[in-house]
Length: 266
Length: 297
Image 1 (cartoon, rainbow over the protein chains, first blue to last red):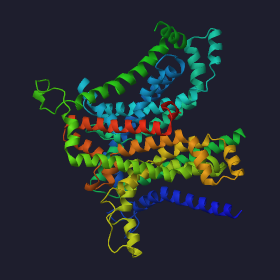
Image 2 (image 1 turned 180 degrees about the vertical axis):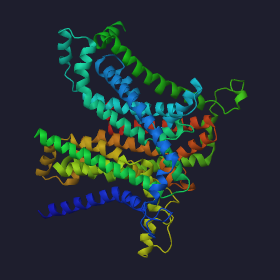
Image 3 (image 1 turned 90 degrees about the vertical axis):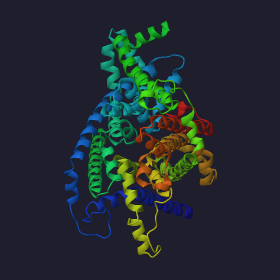
Image 4 (image 1 turned 120 degrees about the vertical axis):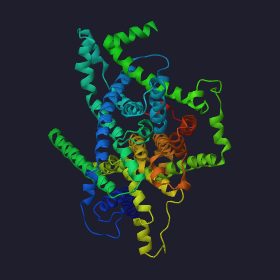
């Protein structure tokens, strides 16, 4: 009994430490955004201000980077989810020799460091199409590995698919199109949606691949990177606060909907 | 081949085949195969002025790769990167194993979803900003130095960023999600009865983990270690933001080559990095006796 109490304390202590490790740096970074001091720091506290948010929102480069990030993410989501779906159909429905090899090749971009994908994408489009780095090469570089994630997500659901449903539809004279739109796609819909969400997040946050692929254009992470490497201003802390607030709102909405659904279901 | 075609036609119809060829074919040829081949081609060619490209001097050579062996500084940075990435992987595993086990086998209900959300939330905040948080903590005027000096432990600011420790710390912080999820998935699939049975028969908790949980979680451990090592060795953001001149990372060598438009040298070093990650993956697969198929379940 006694050792049980000790164990509880150890576990509780570990959890507190773990989440402190996870959240304190973020909380600290957020607090700094409200300090008047032009050097990002907590001490000395020179007074409370919203000034750095104004500085951030007045920065046209930030808005341009944000816009570019949305453009890139939009295309990456469309390409990656389509490719993930195509690869799932290809790998789960076809029986052929070398299927394991094909699978290994298609997951390989996930296991490759992002900078390598960025470099090879940049060199390829430059050499083959004389297209120098820009938003298109960033889209291509990101799609290379994000498609792999989408494929794994969609495949996980496709493996639980009951193929007899399709066979029955075919026997009753349905066309391939009808079977796909009425049976396969509805079944895969949840996986396609989470693949789209994942693709968006991955694209929006990507730095490594984009840095090498994008040339002189900027997405939001590239903008953040260049700011943090130059003169550091609390405007970046203000940006972090925006991210944190949006994330918490997103999490709260998600949790609220989940609870409402589980109440409705239960 | 004929059978394959009929099979495909039976399964997908013409439009389906076109869709699959366009997506999977396009992905494989234009994003995976050709870019890699072009990069390999670059890596084996010398850096030449534009007018000499295609001329008699434009022949395949190992020169770009030899630079790594003949430049002691580059060699040192290369091995430092390997060693530090292994440390990052170990630290991440040590931090993440308990929380993964707790989430998979002990946390229940509302507490579970709260903790799960707590782990995911930081990952919605840009990686660069997460590293920036550590920059603020570890800098000369940062909070850590302030606390140490306030407590009288340090007389003057300690330069935490002089060695590799800041980079390693930042990476272990930035990539733990990629360790937690594979571990959690693997441990979660273990039948809890096995743990209960072992405990009823008098096994110590250490023995339970060593003999039951860890062997079962092998594929998850392998994935977590591979992802973390790959992210650490291939990270450019962490060394750029948290590093100092003395903590130069191998990716920074590659970056410098690209900034100076030496594509050939950069491509060769990128190939070395890719080879390193491939070797690490092979080693982990051998060590944990799992196949690639199990890895990505």
